[in-house]
Image (cartoon, rainbow, N blue to C red; front, top):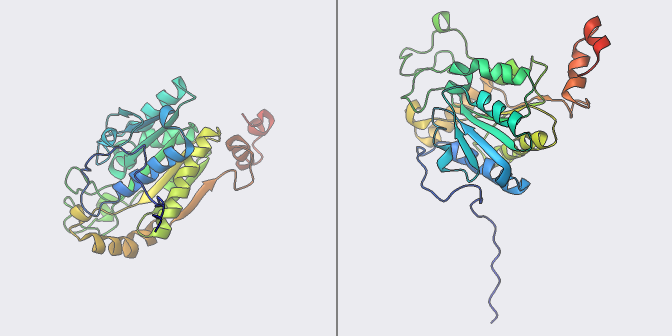
Length: 277
C-alpha cells in the first residue's frame, strides 16, 4: 500500500524563535506573539521589520521574535519606534506594549505619536493590571478591581477611572486604524489576527498610525486559574472595554488620514483654505 503524503496544517511561524517562553500558564502574550509572527511571515517582511519592546511582561520580546528588536525605556517605545521609522522609512516598525507601560508612564508618547500620525504599528496588551512587577493597580484596572495596591478594590473617588485607550485615541485626527480585539476563543483569535495584519499592511501602504488593543488576562496576578480568568475577563472587562473598530479611515470612505481630518475640521477657515496636508 502506498504511503499517504502527510499534509502540514500547522507549524511554528519562522519569525517566532524556537525558545522556551517565560510567560505564565494561561497568559495570552504567547498567542499574540504567534499572531504577530504569522503576520510578519505572511507579509514577507521579517528582513526589514524592527520591533520595539519597553519594560513590562513584553520586555523579553527580543528573545522571541526573529526580526531586529530594540529595547526601550519604560513607556518610551512609541518615541523609539518613531525615531526608527523616520530614519529608516522603508522598514516596518512596531511597538509591543502592556497597559502599565503604554497607558501610564508612556501616556504622553502614546497620545503624541498617535496625534502626529506616525506611520508605525502598536500592539497593545490590556490585562488591567501591572503584570511583571507584582500585580499593582494599572490605569486600565476596573472600578472596584482588587489588586496589590487596591486591596479593597479600585476607589474611583481617589484613583479616578480607567483609561480607555481606543476611545481616547479615536478623538484625535492622527490615527488611521484603531481596533480592540481579544484572543479567548478561536473566533476571536482569527479576528485579532486579521486586525494585526491590517495594522501592518496599513503601515506598508503608507496609510498611517495603527493601534490594535488586545483585551487579555493575567491569571497569576488576578489569582485565578486560566479558565476562570477568561470567564472573569468576559464578565467584567469586555463590557467595560467593548471590542470593535474605533477608527478605520479607509473603511470610512476617506482617501487618507489627512482627508478624514479635513472633514472633521468642519468650517474652520484656516484649515479648509489650507487643505489636507
